[in-house]
Image 1: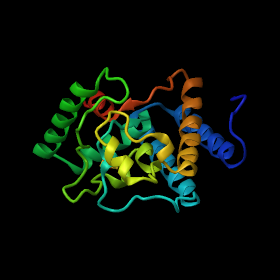
Image 2: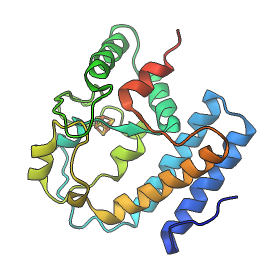
Image 3: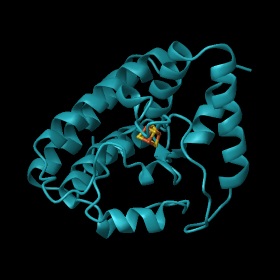
Image 4: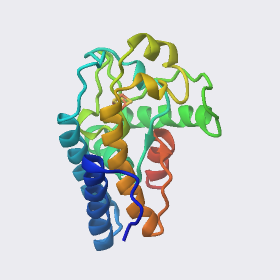
Length: 208
Ligand code: SF4
């Protein structure tokens, strides 16, 4: 059982809820199907938590996609949900193009430190600048609300994106409490706490 939780109040509740959900589902079975089940439930938890977050200062609008250029980090559950979406919604040439895009991006981003310039948009970003994987998008995509669109523009090509102080803290704090609850459970189960880039995660999940 977890000790010394650094959160209090609502954040502590979110941390514990994510910890318990992750422990319960992964102790049943650690296969792809259960990770997808877990990822979808974690996404629902994030959306529920953010519905009560104060995002009134956010500058985000439909059609703005600066935050879809930088490196996005995923939990393993995020990876399986997104990969499931990819395989159910894209076949043949379309899927090949997305995988190829991820391969190119991975070549550019692997081993890069912070603040390197890599202009490479997410392959799920549509021509109309809307998210083509909206219901399956990772936690990080769900919790980033910017208060300064010009900062997003300035940082949109960097590997690590917008500085944290430009983001709506309430949404970020709730999202990270959930991510950290998930990671506390995976650490306890010997699965580690590392998050992976979207490209490394998706490429690592393709059947050989
Ligand atoms: S998954 Fe969607 S929201 Fe996330 S970076 Fe890609 S296009 Fe943007």
